[in-house]
Each structure stands twice: as structure tokens, then as C-alpha cells.
Image (cartoon, rainbow, N blue to C red; front, side, top):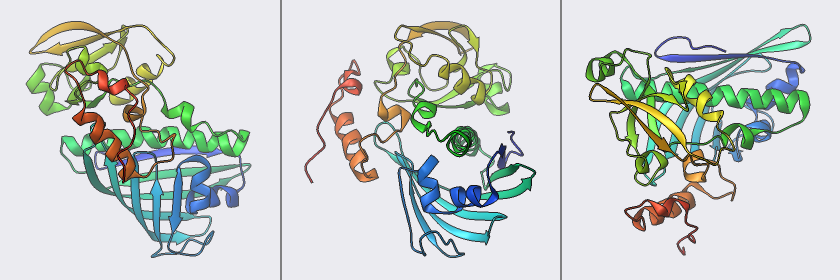
Length: 299
């Protein structure tokens, strides 16, 4: 699996399954529910995707209203995506990209190439590309597990601990700002109030270069390293650069749903947003609200 260009991303995986089964998994709403989405529906006929169909896809705290733009059975499937995602504090963000799946039979395997295009050339586009590339990488690993082993591991794959930040690989512009070479750390675009990072004193503009002594040069490095602390209850050291000086702090990582994005209660996006907004209104200076259980507002 690898990245293609700055305005696109590419993931490639080989699946030991039939061409028809892989097609059903990636091109029908019933198939996506087996490895990717929590709930989905189509304006078209069930199990028979067609150009022009609208798919309503839920991935936890992300929803996607996608239109089928290409449909060549068992060969190629493409969507025009309109994502709507929730931040930990309940703010919504919308973005659009195009996603295509290309299938090729290779002996007992099916080569599945997944391309996402349409990222802007600014920092926001870079962040989105890195997030989606890593997200799809994990989702395709889950597809492989479902098809070859019969195991749905999406909770395990996506419930890795979080800092509660928005971050991206240091780019050229950020390198000039921070003095950290491009690709030498993760630039914090946003630190959510009361998050583990916020409580540890991290703030937007800091560059995280290591977690627990392990280097986090790129976004994929960052996710891989932080995932290695799954199940860790104690404090984890964070090495970061601020105003040209390397510093260190300690953080207790979180696996709470407002950071992982998992939808264990099968809520709608509006319900998740209501809960997070209520939590944000109730937050204390210590940030303790992140771990408090609060009821949903009455409709």
C-alpha cells in the first residue's frame, strides 16, 4: 500500500477471495456493512449498484452522501463523496473527494486498488489526504480479515488510543515556521480543549517528534506508534518542538469515542453531535468532562 501524489492517495491490497465476493463487498451497501460502515442505504436497487445511485454511508462520527459515478461490474466502481464529519467538540466539517475501486483477478487473488482524488494543495488538503489514506489502509486490512478469516476487526483496528489533536506531517511551510525539517515530525493543527494533549500542555503549532521515545516523523509513523500503546494505562512521554526548542511532557492517552470516532451505541450523526455539544458546554477547566457519562439531550 502506498501514496500516489499530493492531490491523490492510493492503497493496493491482494485478497484471497473470488472476484464476485470482492465486488459485492466494495460496490454494494450490504457489502460495505460487513467491513466498513455501521449503517448504509441506497436510492437504487439492493445489491445492484448503478450509475446515479445515491449511497448514504455512516462510519461512526462520519457520514458520506456518495453518488455512484462509474459501475463496471467486477472491474471498476467509483463514487463522488460528500463527507460530513464531527470533531470531538461537536463541530462539523464537510469535504468532497472522489473514490474509485479497481479490481483485477490474479490467480487465486484479487488485486484491489483504491484511489482517492480531489485533495486541495494546502495544509487542509494534506491533512485530509493523510487521514483518509491511513483510514482506508486499516479498512482494507479489515476487508481482508473479513473475506479470508471471517473476522470483523474494525473496532480493534480503529480503537487505538488518541491524543485528541488534528495533526499532519510537517510540510515545507511548517518547516520554515518551526525549524523542524519537512517529514521530521507531526505539526499540531488543533488541540481540542480537555483532550489528553491539552491537559499535557500541548498546543497548536507544536511539532510532535516522538511518543514514548519512538520517532513520529510522518503521519503514518504517528498513527503506527500511537497504536502500539493500545491497552497502556500509564503515562506516555511526548517529545515536541515549540519555538525552536525541544521539550518533553507526559500524556495519558484516551480511547473514548469522541476521539476514536467509533459509534458503539449506533447513534445518528445528529445524536452524536448533540452529545458532544452538551459535553463541550459542560466542560471544566480541568477537562474532566471528556470522561464523564452524560445523557443525550431530550428531543
